[in-house]
Image (tube, rainbow, N blue to C red; front, side):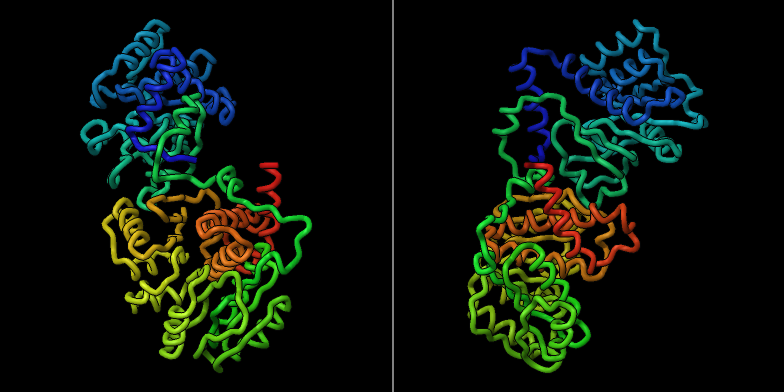
Length: 497
């Protein structure tokens, strides 16, 4: 799903009005109605008190529509209009006249008390056009919202969150009901405190325009993942499904190779070989009998030599950073020019020897967590700066970055794909090793590097989403991930037959 910037969002509104022969006022009514319907589904109890807080821009106009519809449906509604929150727009003014005509009272001092039992605050103060930090009475109101103990619903954007730069102060929303297309700011780690949940409401913006807009940002949801999915040929055999090689492990860290190898095979590749030190031979043969094993060195890898041609290689999990291992890795990079995934100690070794980045095959996939990414490309000022530096890094070295985080980003060819699946259950040791295995297994099956990265990240996250109701977040471990890969495939296939 495309992620639009402010200009594209505004143009989408303009084109929709022109092509559908409606007014901006009617489009505002449509947006407010969708919010109202969501509120009805989620808060059917008529004893719920809705406190709608509006600015005077178009976001406030959406809020006025919501307040009116709640009032007409006999919900308990109080309405507040902040006169310091922007200048009244024509459509806000038109909706305010309708509020006055219907006799809906607003700006009653008692609504600041927040003492009613079931309270939902509707934040409609600022939208996507915010250009400066909230201040004065508006800032005071946002502080009251954040300390209200109410369930907070923001219309389109949590008020105070900027679309194109770092946010310093904003509404803390329990649910953000955004219109038509997701916003980049929603998925940045700097903004996690402002958003617990995002729901995208379809307000019928012109589909042809949306399809034609060029953007660098995409949200990988179930639909986008399925577009990259390659079903298994019913007449295939293990030789056609690809042979993956996982290189890694050292004394005390053989588990990383086991996790990666098992995940690679569970992703669908036909054969899996592990390349690891001799201390891991019995471990891998016992823990994962489907894997073949090649050994080198006693407690760490000293050379990397094999006499077959794997379709893809994943290297780094548990590998360690012994000088002999580093030399073996360097020599391997000089020789090998085929699909490659690098993780963990492979990334750390590259960060110590940045000149080796020039040796990487085109479209090598690097899967760093935040500290590994920082070691590779340096620090950043905020999330927007981070994204620009990742784009520049990928362009310079012709690689694909899988920047692991609560919302993992896959960056390549000046594009940023933000993953929508997964949850905090994945914040556990070994989770990254399983991701390396999944992506390597997909590469071995013939997925392009970009598709393997984007689809692999989504598949990996989906395992935790499926497992969560059964395991809870705290008890979920990385060794469970391979067991849920099949269920994740099943869900992708079932949702998009």
